[in-house]
Amino acid sequence: MKAIIVYDSVFGNTKKIAEAMAQTVGASLVKATDLSSLDLEGVQWFIVGSPTRAFRPTPAITAWLKKLPAKSLKGVRAAAFDTRTSVDAVDSAMLKKLMKRFGYAAEKIQKELKKKGAVIESEPEGFYVLDSEGPLKDGETQRASEWAKSNVES
Image 1 (cartoon, rainbow, N blue to C red):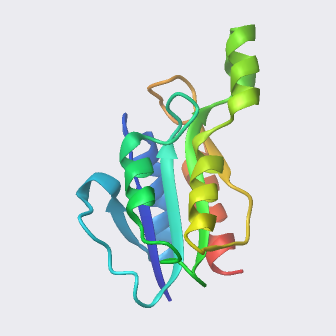
Image 2 (cartoon, helix red, strand yellow; image 1 turned 180 degrees about the horizontal axis):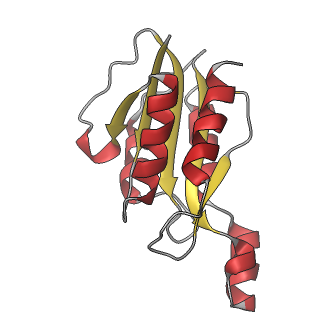
């Protein structure tokens, strides 16, 4: 099965999650900023991830998704993920309200994947960092591997 994981990373946390997934499911791993084009022929699974920055994906992921031609992912199974700070770990009532209202990057990525024709079979997933720059919460790379495996093998 041909699977591709496209990601962006600011502090390296999202990269670690994407690497764990790619290793587990045997996917090609591509950083969004390294993409000039992407051969989607024969792709059966497409996973896209980004850190959550200001309640949305990074500009590199957003721009790349918008450049994909309409219906270019028609029939391709896809999933979205992000890295994020847990709302429970935030020490600001205002920021908690904003996080609940505006959400995270994965939801916005999934919306764009749907627009491009992808078949979405799972909810977007968030993997937790302990602080804005990390590190990842213990066990998150293992959880990411299991999430990717359950998606690709379903």
